[in-house]
Image (cartoon, rainbow, N blue to C red; front, top):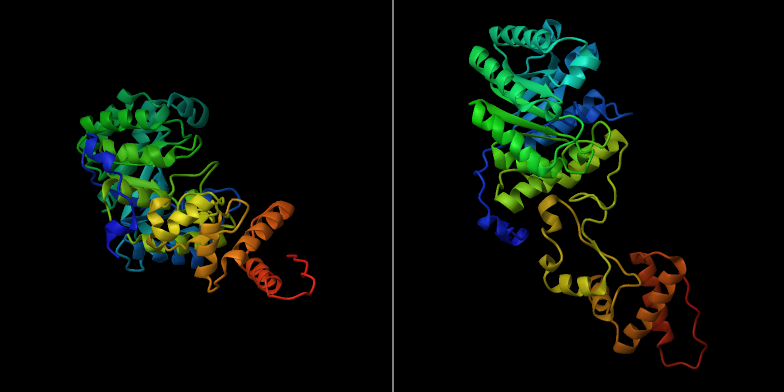
Length: 405
């Protein structure tokens, strides 16, 4: 099956004026994702997730925050020494000791962050902007002098005056030639329009690659990440299953599929998304909601008779992309909304064939059972009903057997 047959392309993009995307993915599941309350990954689990991300073609993996503990440092170092194609990144405060920890881990990139918003300066640091920027510059200089590539990240950038961000980024770019400057929407306050404005303003002011790190407090992290990409952001931050602090981060699975459907970026192996989602769900203890895009239980589940009948002829009538594209499976459910044509297709697909009278009898049983039980019918239950219908429809004077599930 060709790529074009796996999904419907958003052809309206042909009428939109946007900058051609030049992007890479930095997945932060192992660092920001682990900051989800109650989540702690073991070394073996982190290595397994990192290996899957690498095999999918993810360019950068943020492996952790080494200064947190000796165990964390050991895990980050082991990931960095696996020989992955992905570059390995770790987090660092604007503190020499944090940079030393990063150096000991053999990472490719260190993300040195400070907040420059008035709120964080006043209530978190209790220090001036000049003091914090000075700390950042010292840490960046130390890291670059020791051969590390540096991402200078502005925490709470979305509540920081834009001119302040521009000035700080330009100073760091001119003085230290950092590889990235990063904008964090730490409390998820942005929307796509303001994201576009913020990134566009920074893009016009610096020559350094821009990163975007979005949180999902208003449910717009994926949309904001894509808006940032259109405005010129290069590095897009994601987590598997959108886990992370509070409402989580931009979803890896949503971003990768959107990049394909909206912009034709097909270099990532999206067929591993469902298995990776299941892995992270098991390791984190957090199951995605049933209606979660791409990897939710209902993402490819259909009950409506009109929908199912059309899908049996051409799946893309009601599926933007085929489940195989993301390693998922289609699930056709029998319930009160299932019509005769859809039911006939479903029972044929599981190896049964009913006459017209039998099909009519079955549809009535299905409606009665689903309304009584207030839920859809499983395949096993459907097969039992089919057996009952066949027995009841046999030419016989015997009393019809009462059906039950």
